[in-house]
Length: 396
Image (cartoon, rainbow, N blue to C red):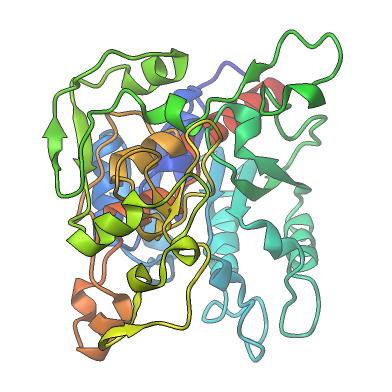
């Protein structure tokens, strides 16, 4: 195992979940680049020793990158948005054209610093996605990285395998200038005991949703604050781990639901969604108050089962899930717990923002930021990143 302090540069940093995992594993987070003001503020406030640039990567010159991050990183992290591979644009052009691909920008940084390692995180569907010329995106990535001298490894990792109380599959692509025997960590937790290998006494049971959040202050819709005291003791090892180093509970503010919405949630059992409601409580058509919509999305506002792992926390999870017992959606802090962010990690910006389509229609794009929920849902779960970082340290 390498004992030197290895340095990390996170170039699509978001709120910092990916970097936090590496920090918890003992790596040194020397730099981050994030274009969104609120996410960048979250990163900077929680990684106080890190140089953070708030800008689009394509706007930052090579000279500025080298000048800012002159302590050359050993690894470059990138949670690239899927659009960064020009997947959706059939006329995207050459992958080396920086105007068409954030992946090309990522490669630019890798070339510039000649890092020993790199990791890209994305959704599993990237493995099936094709480029403008019908070539698989993953093959293009593989070829580009191999040309730069990297050994390339990729795998889909499941968050529950590493003790995160959430069903979340993500693709990780690892590039290394050295061959690696075991590029990704072995599972440490299980969900279904019947699927455990015989005589396996090492793996632990993955926490459930309720085991992750049951110690947080009980609040109803319209209650809670951005900072409040704990009202209960920690009840299990996961909660102890999440509370370590945090004097208070942050970002635990419930949505301001209407009476109709609260009534709607009060009739739901675990597993129910809007599709299971009586007709009179189903959502209205947009801009037609009083007319029940004929489009009911089965995945919206589903009440989560307390004794199972939560469904995938997405950028819009404030509208996806209903609390197991309270008649409201999750708070940002509950989502952060499910993502394995420690309680001391405070998210900046507003909890939610108005529709981005509305902002664009009204010419208010300057107000377009990633709210707390967006930042949490977009993040790599820190404990998953930590498992990856620790495994890599053992290989080098």
